[in-house]
Length: 247
Image (cartoon, rainbow, N blue to C red; front, side):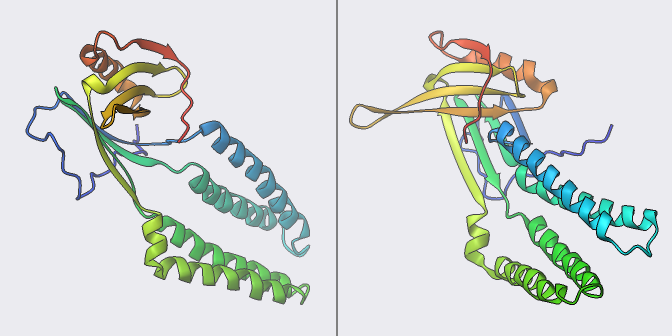
């Protein structure tokens, strides 16, 4: 079987805080850390739009072309835009987890999506060719060729040369939680993950409470869940249920 979703390489700036302690478990994974229902709904809506546009291209293409040529052009347009939209709505974040006797150490990061620049560059060229071709049928399409691909070219140049934009699209976070900070374990029934509630004491008799999402491959579920249950405090319950990722 082909493993199309490979584990990410750890970022060079990652230095495990408890690297000197033997690890109980350690793994890295790419996961969708957001509400998948919303993402799937957006992709389904865009599929309807793309299919409609592809049908228009198929129907309005030159009658001198055969059915096969018109079908392949419309199909190529549909596949290209579908893959582009899929990359936007179903992005994955990189995660690395390391469990030791002291607690749970984890890192999440997102590299600058260079594929977006490549996609935009190719899309600009393809759209330009389509508009120029349509202009041979109707000269009014020349204006669209200037506005559409021209604007996309400016967007590509601004993205490729803007360090501030690239920095805004890059994330890196490194955290550590002691086992004593974990207050509840929820084993998800709808995704390959567990949600861990935690509460950290702060100065001034305050506490920080939130949830940690731990993603893993399905075949690792039993081993990871067992490890968490073994090291949680007796007062921390373990339950099974649906988990809604709110990030």
